[in-house]
Each structure stands twice: as C-alpha cells, then as structure tokens.
Image (cartoon, rainbow over all chains, first blue to last red; front, side, top):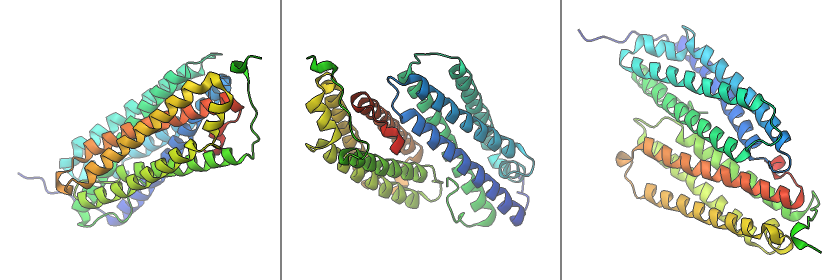
Length: 165
Length: 160
C-alpha cells in the first residue's frame, strides 16, 4: 500500500524553519570567521595565527554541535520531514550522518591544533580546513535542496527566502 | 648592503594598502554571495538557481578583474614589493599568474553556464566547480596576505 504523507502543521513547520535558519546563520558566520583567520598572514607569526584559527575552529565546533542537537530534536525540521515524508527519509538520515562526520572532523582538527607547536605547518592546515569547509558547504547545499523539495511537496509553494541564508 | 634582506615599512594609512584591502573586501563579499546562491535550493527551480549563480559569478568576475588591474598598477602594493624587495620577486610574479589563471577559470565557467539551458545543468557538478574556484581564491588570498606581511609587516587580513 502506498504511504500517504501525513499532513504537516504549518505553524510548527514555520517555527522549525526559523530555528533551522538561525542555526544555519550562526554556522555560516562561524565559517566566515574561520576563513578570515585562515586567510590572515601566517609566516613569522605562526603561533598567533594558529591561536586565532583555533578560536575560530572552537566557534565553528560549537555552532555545528548546536545545529546538530537542534536537528536531532523530535520537533526539528529534519525530524518532521523524516516523519511525514517517507520518500525523503533516507536523505534525512544521510544528512545526519554527514553532520556527525563533519562534527568529528572539526573536533579532531581542534584537538590536533590544541597541541602546542611553535612552528605549525600553516599551508597544510589551510588546505585541510578548506576541505572541511568544502564538505560543510556541500552538506548545506544538500540540506537546502531537501528542505525546499519537502516544503514544496507539503505546501505546493516555494520557501520565500533561501534556506541557505 | 644586502637588498635581499631589506624590509620596508608601509604606513597603515597608505593609499595602496587601503586600495588593496578594499579590493579584497569586495571580492570576498562577491565570493560569499556566490556561495550563498550556489548553496540555495536548486531542484525544481533550476532556471532561477542558475540565473542567480550566473549573476553572482558575473559580479565576482568583475571584482577579480578590478583587483587584478589595480594590483598591476605601478603604485600598488605588489608593484612596491617587486620594486623594493627582490627576494620576494618570484612570489609576486607567481601570485599574479595564479590570479590570472583563476580569473580565466571563472570566466570559462561563466561562459559555460550562460550557454547551458537550465534543464541541462547538473547543479551538483556546478556546485563542485564553484567550490574548487572558491578554495583556490581563498588560498591565493591567504598567500597574498602572507606575502604582504613578510614584505611590510602589515596584516592585510585585518581588513577582511
């Protein structure tokens, strides 16, 4: 028997969408801070550079953890999608797995950079964090696609503002 | 005197520095706008998504051209390094080449996207191409900040 999607509570979804956007904004701000720290001059001031990158990485770690916690709540947008739209359930699960992977990579980099090193290999650190941020952007794009599709399916209309904002 | 070890100071209110920082700020904002557009939802709104990405890519291309032309001026910071700091000459030249290559890559993608019908666009591939360009641009910005700091002891990143 074909599964009929459950009706979605518009007010509850709006609230979940708002929380989701706020979380994404905070993460985007943290990404930009980290990119600024990475792009600052490093030679001859390696320790200062490393310390600033570390602070920015901590901020990103907190933002991602917060976003992940909210996304795991039963009344989050992703939980709502997984519950009401079975055809999107695998994609929601995939996103959650990716959240976890990115979070673990951030934590591992943070741990590694926390070890005092008077001469950090800043070229290597820049590259590796750039890969991490590319993965994070990829994840954000997929999440925006998913939410847009789900919203369109539910309400037969576009989300007014991009969820990537 | 060994010119290769000479280190020149640059006043923090120097016009060349202000221009460089302004150019970097503009190209960074253009890049962030492009990333925002590329990361916005694509399925089911391909034409709208593509139009926004092309518009943002166009703005980034314009900023890169301006930045490249300004950095090529005789009174730019990079020209000052070329003039005053022979030990850093090859890095300035390499940076200029890399910026030119990057601009060409942006331009090629721009042309390719403009020529593609929206329903033929594979947005995941386009996002990946844009990610590569963005990573390269950020890496070059960082190398430029390193170079200017080494030459003048000025933190260009502070203007970002």
